[in-house]
Image 1 (cartoon, rainbow, N blue to C red):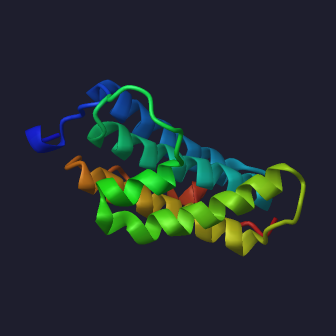
Image 2: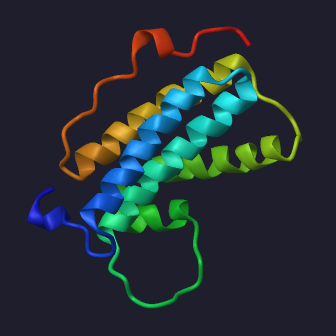
Image 3: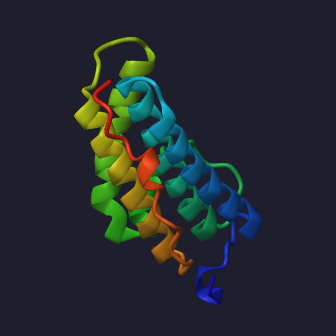
Length: 145
């Protein structure tokens, strides 16, 4: 991380841990047995990546009202505003899935895994970190669950 990107609200270890957990979530998504599980894991992976960026750029300033990371992200990284809106929408769908309402197709789940992986790499680039290795091909979500 450059000095410009050095975390002010969280330690570098916390930021890197969130990024590692994001990647692990993508691997878990690829190994999930159902499209709903894949979709949920992929969204949570994106959420952890966004949390890493927010942690890196947010100063600890006492208590404020809780806000969604997707609400905070555009103010800290305007270039990721469209991603924030996209993942806010997928988050609402994820919550519905977790409640057992509705479903997703294998294609939708697979697309979200790929989008979440792209988002993770954008966050890494924004934080001036090296790219991670792509998900192994044998983990790529392709099975028609």
